[in-house]
Image 1 (tube, helix red, strand yellow):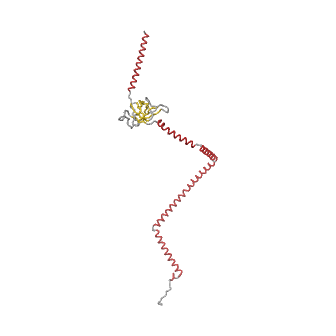
Image 2: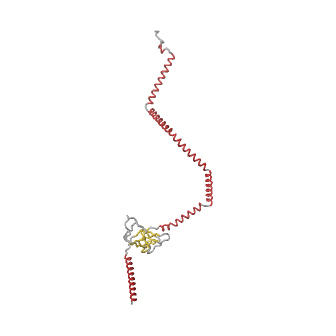
Image 3: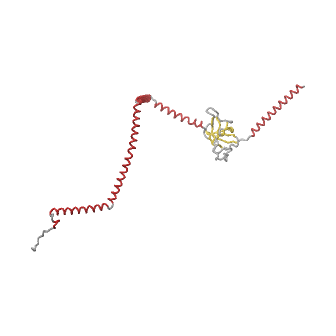
Length: 291
């Protein structure tokens, strides 16, 4: 009887634990399903490889939700409408952007939402929209994938040009140039002592030139003073010519000429009759009346 009583107690305890576990699971599931979510749409152009229901959605790099649904845009066959189920209260802005990113080159894809700016208003559904629509942009990997053919073409052109540049004739020319450079380097190395002497002489000549320039400075100052004096003389001469001085000089020259003429006449008279200067002229002229 005691053994049966122990089995009943153990069975009851196990049954109570199972019931408690089931109740706990149901409670947790109820809490999870009762949680509210916010829904947003994002329209992606082109393929959305790697996305599916349940794919992680991140907001500024933090997991905030998942993809609830994907379907084609009936008005644009190149677009895919992605329904995002995210945590409420994220404050997604109108200038926020959604993109498809990847965790490295081989990692899985996910939807990344940028935070936008604080001054931008909150994103809300417009008239006729069921959910707010987040603007989208191409991811870096997609841009790289789209530009890859152009990059490869440019690389091919560059490789072709490099091959043309490194043909046999150019390689021989480059080898010849390198040989000449090697020979020139050896010549310079052999004459390094002469080059040092030339540099030393150049330095000495420069020092002497600086010294001569310093000695020449007083002479230049004297020349400047002389030029200044000549300038003053030229200024005075210009004032004399353009002023009354030239007229006075002309008058003085005229007086000197008349004085010289009178002196010449006086000299001639003195030579002819030297006594007339002392006794006067005593000669009488012809008197027609005989007086």
